[in-house]
Image 1: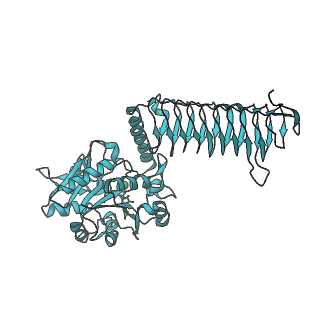
Image 2 (image 1 turned 30 degrees about the vertical axis):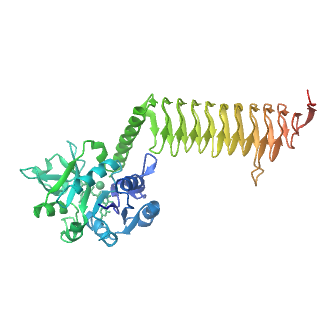
Length: 450
Ligand code: UD1
Ligand code: CA
């Protein structure tokens, strides 16, 4: 049965007290809408319809190709929002999965179970509910003496008896679409002047049609974001979920309370994450690495058996058996091959450091290619910027760069060459040559066979 999701994202999110639309607030590094779009696509395998309204253009731009946006203007409630999707979906889908955009922790697996429940339901609608003491302001699920669901009542309109009910509406439903579109026409305005989707539950029950209420086991999944307090709760719950996943898959996390892993990250077995570590974006960490304490790694691929202490890596690549830190900074397109050693206060950008390169102390390497087993002395700087343009530095194999060398790019240093301490190298250095001074001059050249 073809199922298409409608994501309700037109609401203002007044209680966030923000100029940013609620669905663009970030959770674990991604916008709320990103989490929901991904879950909807995984569960239905169809491009979802996204109902936008408040700051519609901004939200639609964030959705991009991942959803078909429809405009709800003005925003007259959750049922009215679903109605705006009818023009696109009528006759096009068997089931409609309605998703609240402010519940980013609901998993594809939960949506799949809801869809399956509706596939087996002779009635027109299935819904998600949770039980517990904390209502979080959710609507109450009213059941009759046989336990059949008869209605959902909003907290603001509930009687004292209804307020005491401890089963709550999560706000996500799966409808048979041939029933949904005509049913929406029958909904009356609420006392608040809005059309409530929850009235459809009562409508189905009044037609003596079975409503399936699927009670969820994990109440964390139903954390809805209405305020920034909820946003922090959701962050904590999602973080716990991701950390638990990695620990159960062979990663040691010394201090879960201070370790942050975004959903897109992949980590190999027997890697140890030390406290105060952040792994973000498209990061992949190999096996048996030790990361941290105090490390931030974003959009970076790291090999096996690598140690990274108190460092920041962004958009970089690091090989296996590399040791880094403390206080290294790898920037975009820094590439460290296997067995590289980088000590304290090194910065590398847009450069390749071949196998065995050693860069022990405070250096800047930018726009450079550095050959195997080169030793980069303390304080070495590639002067890659002349005020207008960036230039390349190329260093051959087995070169020894003396302490405090300035390499004024563009420049080539041949294999086996050496620079003296404090050299300012402004011209290419042939292979096997020793240069010293300011500007650097040839001291001696290796004779063949020496
Ligand atoms: C809704 C449910 C409530 C449930 C709760 C769970 C109704 C009437 N009530 O209440 O029973 O317990 O969710 O979170 O549905 N939206 C639009 N257009 C509108 C209004 C809302 O797109 O005109 C979107 C919002 O952006 C939001 C979602 O619909 O993503 C839910 O709206 P919201 O106002 O947050 O409903 P709740 O009061 O939380
Ligand atoms: Ca809400």
